[in-house]
Length: 481
Image: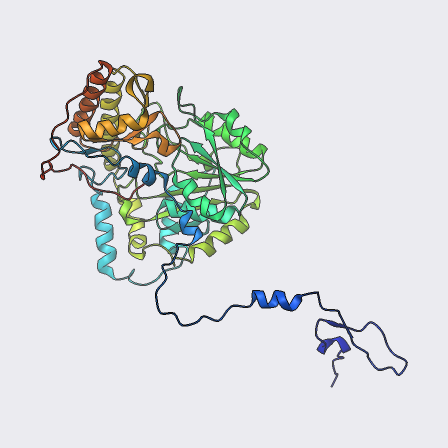
């Protein structure tokens, strides 16, 4: 039987070496001189034993937690003023389409969840990336001839925001940056900041058509840029990017070899006959894209918390990134199994008429707001084409600062809007377009009344705030943003 030769080094500690052989052929180990004060360094790094304590010490939140800040919440808190108790509150600041009950889930969605619940096939854990039937349904629904999708390209998430989080954490390290739209969804920065990932804003042409300023976008790219986030249709503007504009963006991404993170949560929520939503991955040039989407907004069930990321691994650029996203998905062991089980039938059985009704409601509200605001001096609405929002520019020389106007609308008219600063767009405000038309019309009339009085130099008289009974609010608090 053959024996394996064992070298003299095999059993020697790392600090010994066979550097010389004495005359008597005995191996003489040579010890390396220890570093000066190495014992002191070791003592300093040694954990100190914890002693029993008589009192509790208040713990500080972690640095990660302290760096996790949602600008909308911060600005909304600063806007806390008492509303007019004689007028019911109209909260056009809340991006939750469910709060009024006029836009319920489809019957197909309800039936699919009920069937999944009663079948007891989704009571346990599933794969962290999502069940195969759910991923296959997404692949079947969103594949196009120019951008086919395999179920393995799909990673399910707890909402679109979670999909964005996994994409950003997998693609960028501390010190890297991603480009984000200004104005844009502030959660992008909220997700990046705790990880030391920078966000650099590129401008939208807010005084023109709301499209991306491509020269500004290109000027923001640097050696540390890892991806460009494109939100289409846009929150907060409601602008839908045309095919030619998307292709120009893709050419820039190809020129600089950058990945696109496409936030397409509002997808087919378009209501202008002259525009249509086009998935970026379906266009050329074909660059690496991570498309983030979900059922929250188009199917009007944001509380069901089901989203997904589709990884278009062009040129094999995203192989490691996709593996990283799979690893990150294991933190929560996948999203809700029940909603995953219902997803195939939600996607397949929801009728076109359901989406047509959503578009009709949003379009009617958009028309009411646009037609009203464009007749008010010193208010300049940007006409939306999709999503659920509208942006309005304020001439601050006549109507006061953005903050003052928003506060006064609450104080005098009990109408809540979000200041544009929450979206890195000072001098504007955002409102939602999902309310019943009669409430939207009432809100617009109140805004018009206040602004007209302000322009005339009149100060509307405020009612007494001593009453303990306030009129019933037409909305509720929301955690959507």
